[in-house]
Image (cartoon, rainbow, N blue to C red):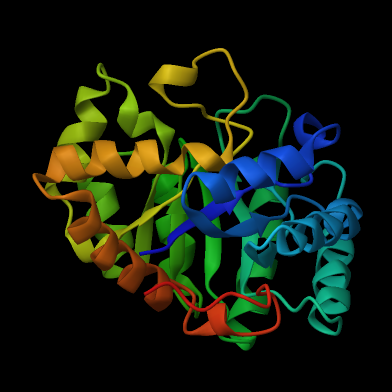
Length: 274
């Protein structure tokens, strides 16, 4: 069985000095591939170079491209869409649009500007039947408001911190829930309850590396190679064997990305997750 990290940031400054070692560590720990997620058009080229390095060590790598809400004060709608257009016409066509969304917990960001940036990218993705990777912080209800009013191709809510009821509505809208390192924290009782109550076919695995490290790596940068720890915690929570769970997770991952894991961004040795 092959582990796929559905959300990591390979171009991040934390990986500049030793990305090759980070990628080799992931491969050695059973990670077969990863979705490199973008945050700004200015970083798309670095993101593509990092994906090429991943393939060079035998990993599969796929790109999601988009402008993160934290960049909404620096990247306008026209610039964000132009960046997506360029990427769509390149050899590294996106398998998803992201990381996009809304963050109402971050100070200094105007909600109207975030809304305009998010909905423009949501529409761009829908025109191409691309799923979206959502950033959500204290914004679940507003995201759901826009999703109900705009055509979209589903996607995944990354690092979800809302309620079980909100998660269920995202799932009704055709979204998956990304399960990251937070599930490994023993004190995350509210999240554990939520994840244990959600349908298994709505869950996918992620790390958000180098961000959001798990319990055993507090105070450190997160690594894609820690993904098996998230799988083990999820398997324990759901009362399943890891291999049995991974079969379901990989099926969910294929569904999330609409069969696009088989094209243009895989290493010579790779296949879609079995």
